[in-house]
Amino acid sequence: MVDHVEQAAARSGSAAGGPLEVEIITSDPDRTYRLSVADAVKLSPSDSAAGATPATATVHMPSESLVRLVYGRLDAEHTPKSVKADGVDLDALRSVFPGF
Image 1 (tube, one colour):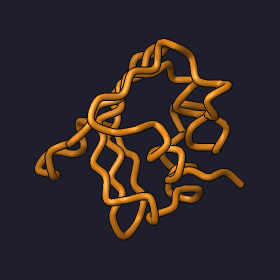
Image 2 (tube, helix red, strand yellow):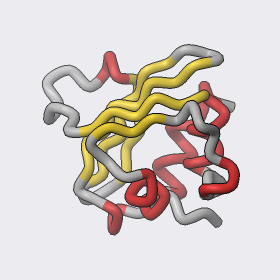
Image 3 (spheres, rainbow, N blue to C red):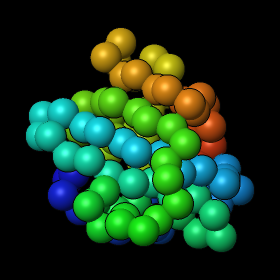
Image 4 (cartoon, rainbow, N blue to C red):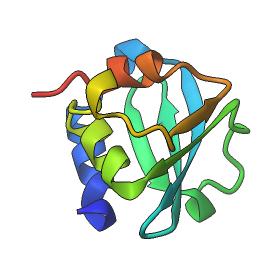
C-alpha cells in the first residue's frame, strides 16, 4: 500500500491544513516522501522534489503509520511511540487527512 499512497493522499488530503512542507521518512520499508500542502495536497517521493520549497518539518514513522495517516486513521491511540515529528505537530498532519 505504501507504494501507492501518493494517489490516496492527493484524493483524501485537505489543503485547509496548510501551508506545510514536510519531509516524511518511513521505515519498514524505507522510503522518503515530501508532503506539500498549499492549494492542493501532494505527496511525492522526496527525490522528485528537487527545486521545491525546503521542508520546514521532518517526520519519522513506520510506513504503516503513513498509510494510516493518509486514510485518516492515525489517531493518538494508533500512533506508535516510534513516530517522531520535528517542526510540525502531528495534529496538524491529521487535519490534512481527516479521513473518509
